[in-house]
Image (cartoon, rainbow, N blue to C red; front, side, top):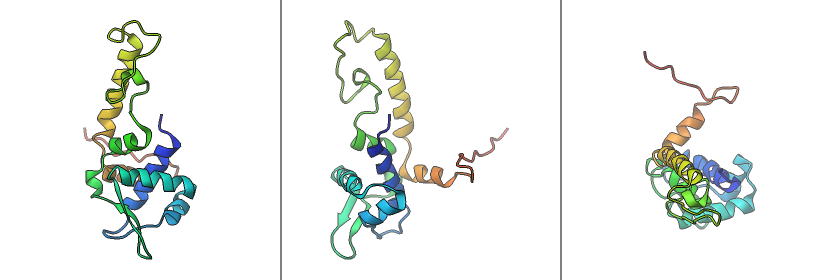
Length: 154
């Protein structure tokens, strides 16, 4: 499950992705625009900076900006940086595997095998979705808050 930390981090990145090239934003402004507690956002942005997703600049013209084009930032990378592995349970994780205490054989455990499929499905989507695509999805919301679906060609 996506934590508030992950959700707020994504909201902040959407905000920063909409800035003009070379423009920066202060934490206070990002927090206000997105209804995120500033102190919590400070921690989140620092983690994103430490993971190479953001850069920061001090001074009156300072603030945060993306460290690379939004086309080069993958949503899976962001979520892992903030929330850790994508797997719903530790024994299904590729990067943080931890066997369950109650499992006699992880190789044949049906819960683990099923959750591994879930992890793979989540990773397939998030590791192939750029911040640019994520921002475009947000912009493609109708007045009722539902995604606008493009008509499918027949």
